[in-house]
View 1 (tube, rainbow, N blue to C red):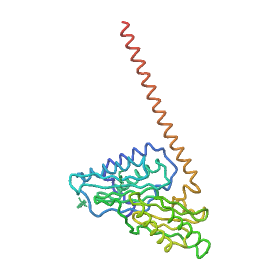
View 2 (cartoon, rainbow, N blue to C red):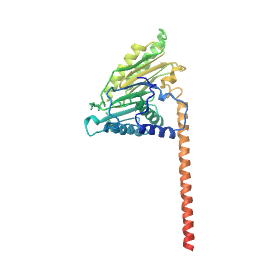
View 3 (cartoon, helix red, strand yellow):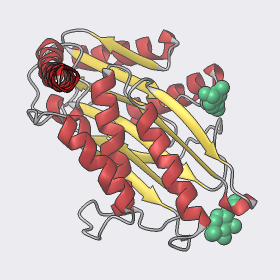
Length: 301
Ligand SMILES: *[C@@H]1O[C@H](CO)[C@@H](O)[C@H](O)[C@H]1NC(C)=O
Ligand SMILES: *[C@@H]1O[C@H](CO)[C@@H](O)[C@H](O)[C@H]1NC(C)=O
């Protein structure tokens, strides 16, 4: 599925939502959170302007709305017929703040409208978030289909380097959370499950991803292994250009810079909002004052 499809978004509602988010968010330096990783759509299509269509819009709106306050959520919009019932969820990367999470989900939902035009189901993984919807329930279903396997250039057979990756990935297996980071200066690693998986399914999924990553990309400069419901990745060295493309370098080396930028953005937005509130309050006071004055005059006459 090509990302460069330039069909019109199927829903003006979504365009509106995305527009609203874009206006509220001050322009920021380009981050990798929005970078495309993979996407897919069902072949089955729904009828535009049908109950299914409006249920889908409702669902996508709920996903976007919820992403301001939670890193994971699932929603079900129950239709009048089982075919019109629709299920959807999103999962933000574990190190994103709520501002970046909601930006990512809003952007992803908007892009799904273009990529999966009128499809009954769609999924999109960006660097910062995963969004999926379908009219068939998929919540809690472990899916270990290999979706992306990409390795960086070979580093040959440097034994120390190989050991470093083994250690960083082994650490991920034992960590136990939904979002896991490991490694040190030389190798950094990250793994995450979609939040609907049980603890044991998440563990099983990540273990499998790591096995495939080790056997497939063990002697590469970096590796990405995405299964349908979890992923594992690693990158070597602190100064790889790939770090930015991989995104998960944040929260380690350059994480401080990013979070400061985000804080500045939040501060700017806050300043604008507080300014607006103050202006409205002053205007209200002024009008009240004028009204009183007029009333006093009327009373005086
Ligand atoms: C999903 O929607 C399509 C189109 O309306 C329909 O043909 C299909 O049966 C639905 N699937 C389920 C599981 O309801
Ligand atoms: C779906 O969301 C509900 C309500 O937030 C939650 O209780 C439930 O555990 C979630 N289910 C899954 C599979 O994540």
